[in-house]
Length: 182
Image (cartoon, rainbow, N blue to C red; front, side, top):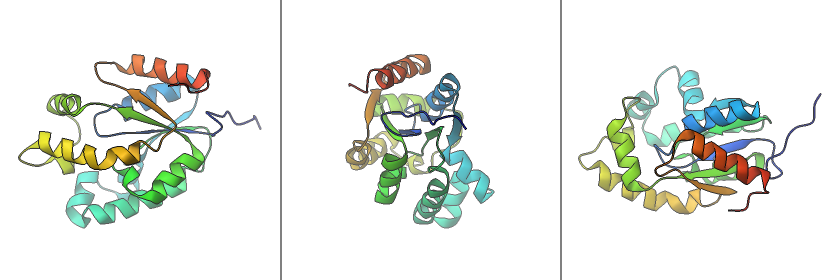
């Protein structure tokens, strides 16, 4: 069995950050580049639940979704050699932050509220339950303000404003090769 590769001393990589920071797109490309398996936590949750994330929110509420999210993360995070893309709210649970930091090099993908709003307006993908409000810009700022301290409990930070997936990946690879200096 080959030796497990380490990223800042940890056997996997997790991408955290707010919605529309590029976690899934960056994660897929990063996993391919590093020859690792990619796991999108939201996709895994939807698969195991047998319905979409918005359906879980509608049917069970956010608190039940967060508990289910924790159970799924607990099962998958201990497997080495992965790149994980997490949901934007995974960091709200201290148990999740501890799991992520123990089992993976946590990289916070950062985007300004303006960038998030621009990407939301161009999005044709899955609806975002927490942004289904009258004033999404205010909600984005409110949610970010409440989460930044948790996102900050990371190993590396990479800003995605005005940058494509390839550029973000280049920076991540560079940070990992030089010992993670920021």
